[in-house]
Amino acid sequence: NLRSILLALTVLLLATAAQAQTTNVKASIPFAFVVGDHAYTAGEYTVKSMAIDGVAIRIDNADESEKGITLSNPCSSGQPATGTKLVFQRLGNNYFLYQIWTEGNSTGREFRMSKTQVQLAKNYGKPELVMVAANISH
Image 1 (cartoon, helix red, strand yellow):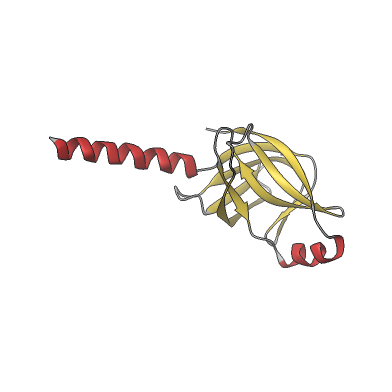
Image 2 (image 1 turned 45 degrees about the horizontal axis):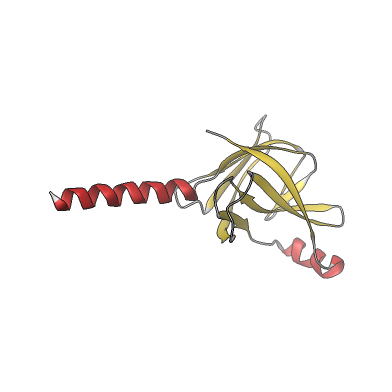
């Protein structure tokens, strides 16, 4: 009996942790942007985890003309996010998707810097952070 209760609690905890690591958001992005080595035009996008671990992220625009898959790393904050948002780094006139946060979570997803982004950072110094509000998609 005790073994069954412990198994049920373990499954519940794993399911909760898995849910917290997945990403599924929609946002209207008013500018062209880059993730990794893939450039995207301005528009409506869905950003979604490909698996429970959240490492592979799929990025699709509403009309499905732009799509890509990129890898991400976990990131954390001392406080839970107050809203669901995409965070971009702006270097000059170039925007790079940097992080994704969902409301109520203190963990998010962060994208690796591309070679172009590293080079631009040398020229522009510290990037400006630009937030775009997003909605959790189901």
